[in-house]
Image 1 (cartoon, rainbow, N blue to C red):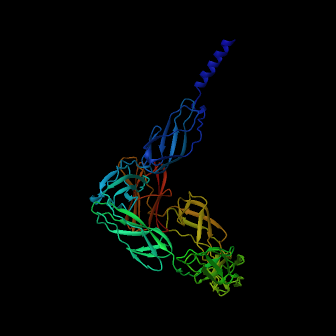
Image 2 (image 1 turned 90 degrees about the horizontal axis):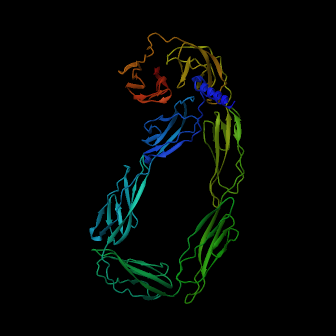
Image 3 (image 1 turned 60 degrees about the vertical axis):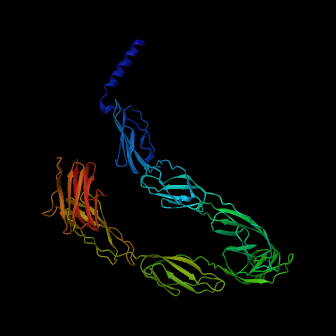
Amino acid sequence: MKRKVVVSLALVLSSLASVPAAWSATTLLGSISAITTTLDQGTVTVTPPTTNSPGAFTVTFDNPAIATAKGLVVTLLAPGTTRITFTQAASGAYGSATRTVQFYVRPGTPTLGAFASKTVGLNSGSLTLIAPTSSSKGSWTFTSSDAAIATVSGTKVTLLDGGKVTITATQAATAEWLTAKTTMELTITAVTPTLGTFTNITLTIDSIAKVDLTAPTSNSVGSWTFTSSTPGVATISGVTLTPLRAGTTTVTAKQSPSGGYSSAKTTMVVTVLAADPTVGSLNDITVTQSATSSPSISLVVPTSNSTGAWTLTSSDPKVATVDGNNAQIIAPGKTTISAQQEASAKFGPSKPVTMTLTVKGTPTYAALPNLEKLAGDPDVVIANPASKSDGAWTYISSDPKIATVSGNSIKLGDAGLVTITLSQAASAYWVAGMTQFTIRVLGVTPTIGAFEPQSIAAEDTAAKIKNPTSNSPGIWTYSVLDEKVAKVVNGTVVGVAPGTTTLSAVQSPGGKYGQSNTVQTILTVTAKVAGATAKPTVSPSATPKPTASTSTGATSISVIVNNREMTIAAVGSTTGLKITINGVLAKIGKNTVKSGSKTVLATVGTKVIYMKTFKVK
């Protein structure tokens, strides 16, 4: 009994092996996500979708200028986006199947060569940089990390001082490659000068107004500059030190590089003894109080050579109050802020220093309602919004064709949406303000006459549709029910083949009128007029031959078809000329297309100057 079962199973398998192709098993391909890679990868191996068939996969691309494939190995050619199609061949009982996804090639990161560090002597004066090798052709720029030691202009490095700097080489991005950068360390060798002493000094602020500084001795002839670490204690201009208040400051003497010597510096301490205080002035301040909050501002006390504490007060606490060095804004207005310094050590109290604090408020307004009106409605009169400011009001319309403003009166015009801006001018203690509302003016439905039956000849691009009568100036747009009979090309109804279809027309909004209702009629397309160019015959011959041409007087269009190449020529003016193949922008010259029906359409502005359909094998 067991042997009989085995025999029966073998017979079944044998029968399945001879199943006709029409009964073949269904090949099931799994889903696959879009593929993204970068140009610097060179080649990538793509993974096909999962499948229940053992059939081999091949890969093709819609745009072979971006990538090509051999088996599943893809060679990347240029950045861009194309579609990749995985095709699994039929195998045994399984039929063939395809799966198509987006394939993105992003710009790559260029590979840079060495940018070697260098050591040069300061006496060299300059150095010319050589950019690293790179897989990109992007332009190079160079920068220095310390402009006091070395500067870069183009590829020339100017050596200014001894030390080390980092030179950064940056390569600009191109269509194929991202930006890239690399660095090198530049060491500039120089002799360090030998400096003499720079002795500390003590000054009495009320007895010495200025002191001329003497530079230390040096075996370098480089020029000297002097700086003060605490300019509030003493400032320096050139070689002249001016004491300002009691305290200490460190004066740094720096010698510039010269004759192969590097820069050098040394310091001394300047002590300024106390004296009668010298108090600076305060600047007037104007602040703006927002509509929702009252700011707190920090007040800066006058300059002084005394360390005594300062006391600040406000003459009008209804405008602003003062706590320490902070002023709290209360309301729009004007107040006087007084600052007085207390006695400290040898310094007595200062005289009061004053400044004016002006507070300007931000006016607020209740929201104005948006309006909806009908074209021809009476004028709209608007009252000025309530405001604490007394600034003058002005109204502005965003579109005078829809609404014009005269004072508080708004006159309605054409249909549409307009924004009315109400602006309030600034006043003594208030900033300018603004509020807006919209008026939607609805158009009147136009009165449309009868849409008479229409008749045009096939391929007659000059045929005109006689529109229904209307009291609206709106533009008419059309649609055709059966595009095998007629098409709408750039707003013009063009006959394709003899027959009848339904023509629909709608009038766009215009002036005071809104969009019309859709009207329909019967469109009859008759045979093309005598003398029209015959439809082209495609020749499989390797020698191209012209299949169609037309002339507009100013521009002549001709098309040559050779297998899957459509060569388009234009003689005469090409200003404003636009050519498409099946709605896709084409170029003058060779255009590679797929097999099938291809319609070439040429227009200048809204005028159709050429339209022919070809059968490409």
